[in-house]
Structure formats: structure tokens, C-alpha cells
Image (cartoon, rainbow, N blue to C red; front, side, top):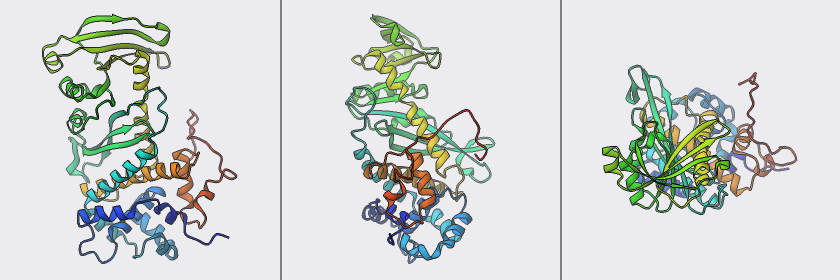
Length: 388
């Protein structure tokens, strides 16, 4: 009979705690703190994410009910709403952001050999943002519209393994296009973006850094055709052209040729027009790469549905950012154990199993035993669920 540590404690052992303490020391997170240090704070916030806690009272009640096991989970102090609220208000959110970036690097290395779906060795990124709505009266610092507050989570995702490599949290009114100014382009990499990022001055900067971009053209796009290349209509590609911009300011901002590809998506019954600075890839591959951009939409949907970033434990900007970064760290932790334990289950299934077994004392692999747990992906159907 296994009488060792809980699954939660085993899960926390996958985290690099020495490097976490480096992040804490960088921002003096534990300065003059005798009890309830940053490591315990992170553990509790991760617990709240893994078990779908909805409020500070919810966290306090649940953990106090398991008081005899908290010590072995790495939680050595009495849990109270006041302690949690004070920590969320005063601990520097950059501690948790820096730690999430450490986990990003670790997950990136684990998923480096993941298949992309096309024969391409270069790194492919998808860039997009999601808006998280907030109550105007509780979050006045995040003013979005006259009667609404919101924040945006801007994400650059590596499509090999769906690992977010860059995350920037801003007020809701910041336009997506400004995020291109914050990126450091990787030469040879592909950046897949939607029309919200169509700014020819910034795209030309990517081009000058020897990075490739694929984006969609707007309906009022003006251009002059230079060449037309042969296409195979059976692949869905309707035209493949080399063009020059003709409108004055775009032509000044991007003075070099672009490639324009018109593609008909049979599944969606929709015609799409792509712009790219890559002239070597087959036109069908360009369309296929843009289709992979949907992975970042799936990521946003996943964290909104399965992690706690829609109801917040605090109302200050600092508290909101701590909760978002610990949610990202939880996502990365699940992705890391999936690889390191060689689990075949989906991230959704892994998270569901962890949510009901964190206090169990058994080897963590036993919780995912094939004998008791079927391998399945998240199921989507038109039938509504009675208990959603």
C-alpha cells in the first residue's frame, strides 16, 4: 500500500523551486515576511486553478477541511482570506510572470520535436489576443468603454506543442497592432496573424529582420499585379501573385514586392486572401499554416473554460495579473507533466483527473493508469449538457 506523498505534492515537485526563489529574491517578495511566503502563495494559487475554486472563501474552506494534509503539500501556515487577499495585493506580480517564463522555456524544450503537420523545420508562431471582460465598478483601472472594463491577454504561441512563448497583459483599449512593437523577431521564423495586425510599416520591420509573416488582406486592399504564378485549382488555391502596393502610405511603408494568395476554403465555404513575404513555400502550404492559427484560439478557449481567469480573487491590477500568470503556469505545468510522464491523455483529461485526486496518496502515474482511465480527447457535440 502506498503511504507516501499526495498527488499535489508530487505535482509540485515538477517545478524548479530554486529558480522560483531566484525570482522571489529579484523582487524582494519575501522581505520581512515571517509566514506565508511566496512559495506557499504560489502553491495555493495553483491549487485554486487545479480544483476550480471560485473565491477566497472557497479556497479557505476547502483547504481548512484538509488541514491535516496541508503540511505535506508544502503549505505550513494557517490559510485565511485576509492572508490571501493581502498577498494578492502586495506581492509583486513580476515574480509569477518571471517564473511562468521559466516554465515556458522548459515546456518549449520538451515540445521542440513535436510534429507541426507540414514539412517545415522553421519555428511557426501564431499571434493573437483575447479580451477578458471586467466589472467597471470593481476594476476602474482597466477602463475599456464608458460602462465597461476589460483587459487583454496578448499571446505569441509556438505552434509546435501549443506553448505560449510571449504573453503581455494590457488594458482592453490597447490595439493589437501595438504588440508588434514589443516583439523581437526571430530570423527565419514564421509569424501567423489575422487582419488586426495588418500594418505595413511594422510588417516591413519583420521583413527587414529576415522573419516571414502570413496575414490576411482587408477588403479595400489596393495593389498592382506584377506576376501571376501557376496554381492547381483542385488544391483550393485560386491565384498566386506577386504584387506591389499602390496606396501612397502603404507603398511608402512597404516598398518591396509582396505575395498575394487567394484560397477557397471548402469546409467553411469562404474565400480567403493571404499576404506574405515568403515566395518559396507552396501556396497550399501558406493556406495550411494560416489554418494552424486556430490553435491559439483553442488555447484561449481552454484557459477560459478550465482555469480561473474570469472570476478574480482581487480587484487590483496586481491581484489580477498574479492570478493570470499563475493560471498560465498551471497550464504549462500540465503540459510539462504530460511530456515528462509520457501521458497519452489530452491536457483537458489530465486536468480533470488532477482536479479530483490532488489529496490522494498514490503514485501520480497510477492516477492516469490505462487500466482505469480511457484515453480520450475533449468531446464536442451539438447536444447540450444538462450540468454545464
